[in-house]
Image (cartoon, rainbow, N blue to C red):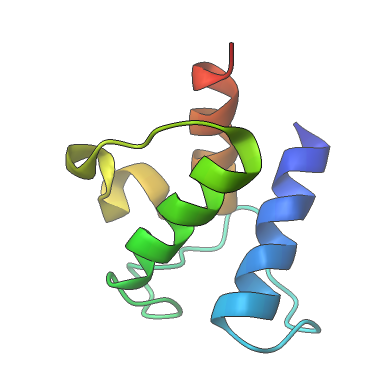
Length: 81
């Protein structure tokens, strides 16, 4: 799971925050803290689908499910074949 978390952190800091040196932790609240807006959930879902071949249903795209890198990584791992 460490590799997945690192890949997620790299994507978020580089592509969404435009700051690859941002010291994001795996448990840092992303959406509820305002670091990433809720509209970015769609971008995250598209990236996950492309990078990991998973489908994320629109109903799953909530801050409750994907507010931290750890939550997103756990979802990916739970849904990989």
